Length: 156
Image (cartoon, rainbow, N blue to C red; front, side, top):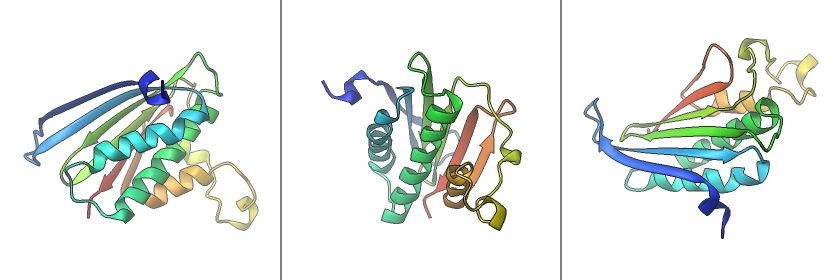
């Protein structure tokens, strides 16, 4: 049995209310272990690219940002607690993809995380993933609690 068979996956295709065409929605429950990240990212990338016009640059940006968000959720949010899960919801539209990653941790304030480009913060390991996500995605939002990130990537 591969790891994918143990993931809880739901995929549905519905007409997009915005008139963008058919959308695929994927939902996963990922165990809080970093070993699952690569397989989850590949599964999501396959679904997001299937039937859509997307460049290799789009795939790269999607995979790197999602990997970083999952690593943050598993390691920082859930503390790699095997009793906790990370919830992932992906909406694949013709023009863009929305990725929602939610952990079961207590959350954080993203405004307090320094960007690792300033001399004082260059060696600080905290914030690099978030910096990459913000650099690669077209839009990044957090919920008020700080345990859920919503990332948007356009297919341009």
